[in-house]
Length: 363
Image (tube, rainbow, N blue to C red; front, side):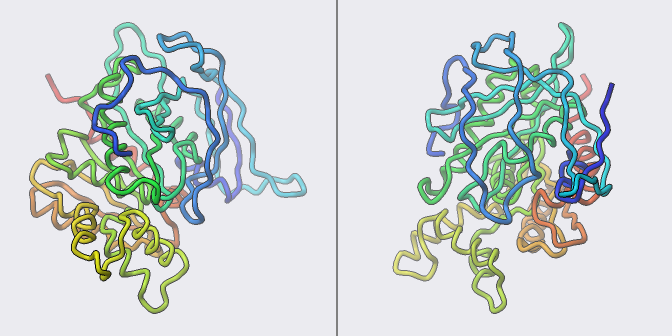
């Protein structure tokens, strides 16, 4: 029996939705890893709220340290201090999918969570979605509130894999992109573990993770990496974000993003090291990688987003000029990244786009 909950505004996002390692670096046999402590994301960069999930021992090929979540599980309502419930949204609790954590590299941050549903012996391989979290490239975590969103996508027929990556300032660009590429390579090489079709993988990123997602879709011939990209509030042009953080009236989050760019590329434009800095900044700007054959993209911003839609309109124009499909959508409100899932149309838009671009090609 499916459970239905009424939840409050603080949980509305989940209600409507719910590294330098060379590419391919991985263990010969992927082994689930025990859960680690979850670092908190910087203010303004968190995903939908959520907590750790537990399960019963798995029975698949990975070792006994892996877990398989029960098919049905409880969920908590978001109540007021006096115990009453404010009815802002209705959430249908999806069945818990199977869940395991793997290491796709040797660094402590190079971990990936897999969410999938058991397939029959003759089941058709399923499309997959790689999730990349936000956090100014400085923080955040693969489990930072995206669990419900991942669970709900598995009910739509997708396998979901949510990856961590090495963070700035300790890890300098392009370590973050290298890790995203390595996580993607890990998924494709081990696709049979989760009954994934390695030719039908899309990437969905939030904020800084959205920037990494567009990089995967444009680097080289993007469609060789992914079939499609969805990016929520992506700062696709870090130098533009650096400039926006210095304009009169820039708010705390714009100023923080400006400093995050400096921490990401380990240099400050306009200083004595400007020449080398421009080389790194150009590489970190997704538009410099656009070419024919890149992956189609859905780029979403809110009208009051501190990462403005201008971060995506230039990229979309370049993609269209190269013959690549690019759609820019705006959501009315002051939302940022995963907060856009509070809009009732965001989740259906994401699912419809994924199904369109990850549908199986006719034989």
